[in-house]
Every structure is written in structure tokens, then in C-alpha cells.
Image 1 (cartoon, rainbow, N blue to C red):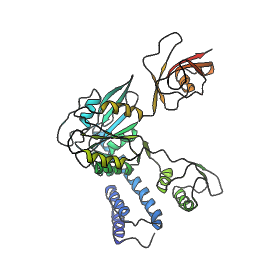
Image 2 (tube, helix red, strand yellow):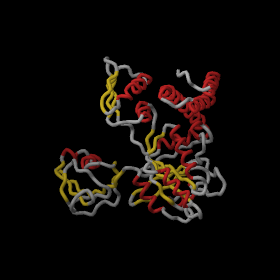
Image 3 (spheres, one colour):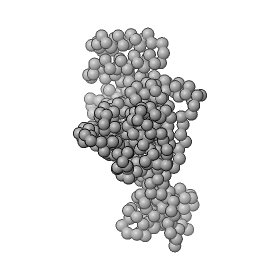
Image 4 (cartoon, one colour):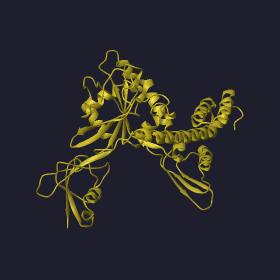
Length: 386
């Protein structure tokens, strides 16, 4: 342990040793993490504290979820092509937004905590339906079990994408920072790819590091791996990572989600400067859109953005000589003709001859392509097989 920790840290450490409940341990670990000095000499200590804190929070979440499930159901079965959750602080306008975008009839009130359970609705978007679920208000310390935290965070982790709603009239940057902090503490990473690292355990030889890793990070990574129980392994870094991303690369139970930010109540006077501050904070990290749920402004663009956050495409199949099907197949972005053919029937792959395509992925309508051709959203595909 470093010798230059503060008195506050030592006091927090003593509280942790004396803690008897999970809640007390979480509070003490959080205090320890906030008081430990930040420099190279404490990186290992800070990592171990974060790891311990994340584990205790998961225990707390699992216990609270188990208790809550015996009292009432918080689960919303997925419908449509995807489930997208709306999260935000009290009175940010989530209920009205849900009503505007879907067929839901959520209760809208001017007082906080109107919703204490998830409210689903179905949003239509060009031949498909997307399920939107308004979550109860997200507040500070939900990641530590406050309010409905465990149940809410469980749903957020299982959702296909996240829409963050903030109120331009109430310090939107602070609201966003609070939300991001709570999700980060709960092991939910937004608009980030999983660190590109390949780890393979071996029988002997110690730990071998290869790929794009700086020399000064090697000792740090070796310590991380050993703390996770790796003593003989081959590790290949496919990209240069920050130390924070290195911690995530070997952590367990993290969820990676796409998210957009909606700045609601943009129709109110004096919100221009608040939106500009929010735009600077979001930078290139989060797509940001000004809306007015009350007046219905900007909602058509939001439907498109929500669909785009799902990383899927709609493909319309066609029988030769007939019109395309009205209901599309939904495939992952980057899907090929082979993926489509396999989705229809495996015989379309084994007996495949060619496909004709009309749409953005080809140079002209009816162009002949093979199984490896990558499809685009809205393509019409006619598969020809023997």
C-alpha cells in the first residue's frame, strides 16, 4: 500500500473494516476511492478499490432484485424489433415524450416521481415497431441501491439502446453528469466498443503481451491480469488502450450500450445557453438533439435516430415476378446476402446461384451479386437458388 495516503483515506479504510452490511461496505469503499491520492503510485490501489466496489454493488443489486421480485414484477417483455429505454431525472418529460412517440398513455404530472414502474409503448418507424420503455426517475446513488436502482439498472443493462432525456430548464449538464456517473458505477458503458484485446490462457510460460501496447503500460497490465487470476496467458492488444479501458478489458459483467441524448423543453425561453453548454459537454461522444415533447418538435428526427442507434437494417425479400414483401426482415448492420439466405432457409445457401438487389448497396437496380455482398438498409433482395 502507498505510504502517502491521507488521514481521510485511513479513516474510511477503518470504516470498511468495521462495516457489517453490504450498504456500509459500499459507502466505505466509495469514500476510500474518493480520498485516495491520484498518481502513478496509487493506480494499483485505485484499481483494486474499483474492482471491490463494483463487486459489492453487483451483490447489492442482485440481493435487492431478488427481494423486489417477490413483491412485484418490474420486468417488461420485449416486443417489436428492439427494446429502448428512456431514462432521465425527475420531471424531465419522459412520460410526455413516450406518449408522443408511441401509443402509450402514461400519466403526465408536474410533480416528481410520477412513475414508479416501467411504462412501455410501441413506436412505429417505416414498417417496423420499436418498443420504448419509460423508466422511473433516475436519481443520484441508484447504483448503490437507492430508490428503484437495482431493478432499473437491470432493465437498462438488458435494453438494446438508451435514450437519455434531460431538462434544459434545470442544469442539463449536471443532470447528464449524474446519469453518466451512475451508469458508469453500475458497469454500463455508453457509446464505447468493447476493448479489442484477445486473451488466451496457456499451460505454462507466464504472461506474454503482444500488439499495440506502450512499454510503460506493460507492468500495469501484468498486475491487472494477475489480479484477475491470469498467470499463464497470451494477450494480444489489437488497439492502443487507455488504462481505464485496460481495466474494462479484464473486468467482468460490463454492458456496452448505444445512447443518444435528448434536450427537452427547448421551446422554453432562455434555454439557448443551456443547450450550448450541453452541446459542448456531449462533444462527439453522444448524439444530442433539442426537442419539445410538449409541442412535438423534433420528434420525427428522433424516431430515425432511435432506429439508427440499434445497428440494424431492414431488408425486403422479393419473389421473382412479384412485388416485394411489405414486412421487412431485420438483420444486423453489416449483414450479407448469406445472412439473409440463411435467415430464410438453409437450402437457399446450399443451392444458391445469385441474388438480385434493388437499393443503396448496388450501383443499379436488379444488379446480380453473390453471397458475400453486404446489404444496406431498405434493400430489396431476390434470391435465386437451384
